Image (cartoon, rainbow, N blue to C red; front, side, top):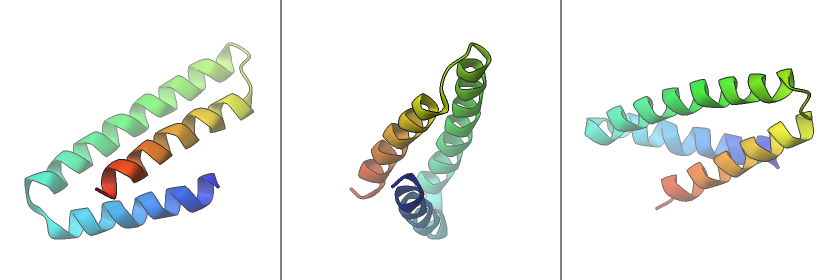
Length: 72
């Protein structure tokens, strides 16, 4: 499900970016900060013995939230 939902988010983001304007700029900034935070969070989680299952679960939660936000 993560792969399917991620592809939907990518498509929705690309559509938003194609329209341009201030919303597109804001989306790019949000996307970059989300990815940097997610990478740091996952690395920290794994460094302290966390499971990959937990990392994927957190990613799915974030992807679902982005999908819901972008579909409005």
